[in-house]
Image (cartoon, rainbow, N blue to C red; front, side, top):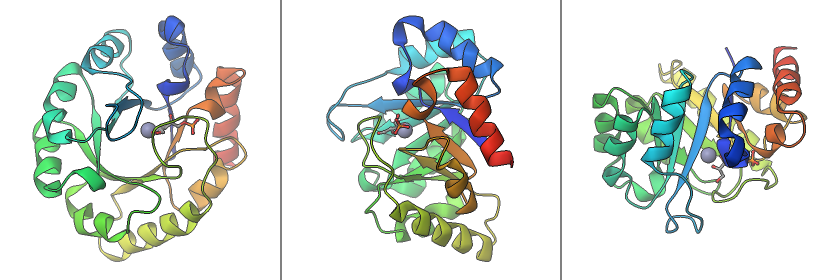
Length: 218
Ligand code: DX5
Ligand code: ZN
């Protein structure tokens, strides 16, 4: 099953309750929460209090993407706040197996994130301890950027590697520049979780989610 994960980075934060309800009603599967620390990436976004607030208004799984320099310092707080999925960047997680184990021990699904130029070896080394691999299709930090096409080959390589190494259960999530018109390509390359911010929140949110669902189910 392909899961659609609207990225709340592109939401209207003053109407967040309504926007979350619209995501739910339109059949989105997961809410993607971009946590940026002003260090690993320049912007500062959401903290655990935001996740806790979301948890109080929805039962949708919360997918917390930690774009922070010291993820080990953060995973516990976000798990306690109500995150279901937590992913950490391989570029800043030197003790990846330990970090992934910690996330799982907190009762969350654990993911490893790779920037577009990070060698895929990182994913291969950590995949056995991960529930999902998040392959960035833009350099992280900002919404509304263009999809980097080399993602498609990287995704195919990771999917093939996982399937030939007995890890078919490990999902691939794609994040960055995913829109209705390229979602199908990402799915065909092996992604089963599609993060989309501006592609869904610009215009009619519900109609966009339905249109993306149609494209990927066709
Ligand atoms: C980028 C974030 C993404 C971002 C995607 O650093 O990780 O989740 O919100 O936004 P779009 O879909 O607009 O590229
Ligand atoms: Zn993200």
